[in-house]
Figure 1: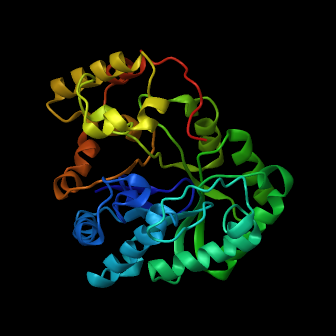
Figure 2: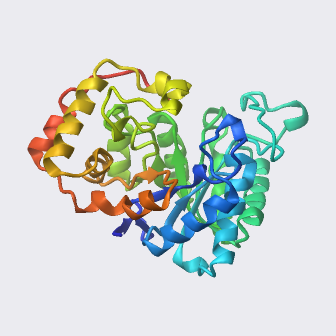
Length: 339
């Protein structure tokens, strides 16, 4: 595995980041692809052994069980806390373990009042709960999973709360996720103008089939020294197989149909297939290599030992300018998604 600095910070992260949404409770949100604790723990150990030292989770994944499993892996395998970079997120409420309810974060009221959103109270409560589930004393990178009206009405409360957590030592770095550029800029500059901690990373939807982030978020992050750690780098599996091949999950996946339904996708995948065949490597490795060429560290859900062991394949692929041009040429603007 290779490592690089997270933005302009001095924190080194693995160039391939392990996405831990895969680990938790298979009954969560009707997601049978989520692995149980028994299945997940050996994968976390293997990822660590392969040098994937950066693990991304969130308090809402499997209603907290993903964080619990990450914490158990450190203890079970006696992995030194200083050897891993743990990223987690807050914003959504954490429901009962077996709950499949999907509360609307915009309605911060009733039984879940103050259990979601970006108030100082919820931020502090959420961090304490994550620390307990992770069985650790600090979070390496705390990320805002989404944003709400706090961005407009009181960005100072939000950024001061995050800064205070850094000053307390409970959080070391801050990250953002899935927001508009104006929202990121408002929060980041609120912190800078007040001498508070700004963002070190942006976790956004970015891959060969969805490149709208190149218009504003990515250039902003580049000039501000905010590292890119894209989620869904393989477009929910569409960049791992020929276009006419479908899995049972892809046939039923509402998000795949919503986010990646553009007609141009067939040509992009065909070009990706061509590059992979000529290089005698997997399509996923080429798709990941393209992101690595943008200085991004993709977050990948790896649900088998084989996939973990092959995760570093993309690191040895250095795409030529002609190959990059071939992969990028068919793309045309699409509607902004996943915000």
